[in-house]
Image (cartoon, rainbow, N blue to C red; front, side, top):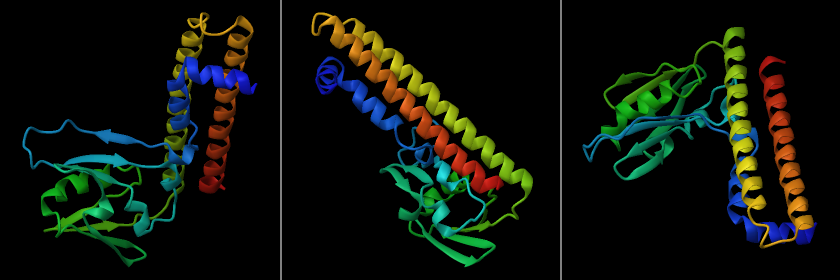
Length: 210
């Protein structure tokens, strides 16, 4: 088996990198809302990143940290361009005084974060009221988590298919037995990843719905 893996890495090293990105647990899968960058060099743009681990019913200031805003200087986490503070259990304050030009993009990213947040702005201060958690909101979060999981599985199937096709075209680099072994190992790696995705989804679903 070790020989098969070594040969496979030589035949199709890119698969290992692709699979590595997909073998992250579902808690790392993200929803990304991207808008085309405007020609204006100073334009900021929302790039809402929501790991499934943040599909939770308990909101805290840390829940906003991984929301990313794309600026003229690149992609920056919200907590890198603002000061985030918990005013009360029902209110988070996001101070954009250091990067006022990104206030609008930050507001859009928070709204599109999938966390059922409706921020309000006062100059460069963004007020983020914490909504009351309802059964409907919990069910919505579970739905989003399932959608993310299915997207990850779709990507994994494409990676698996492409890898196997490339391996089949590499008969001149390895024996038929080695090719079959590699194909089997690819399928096993993909199956293990699917099982991991399902396990993390089940944990998150139980956490949200009890």
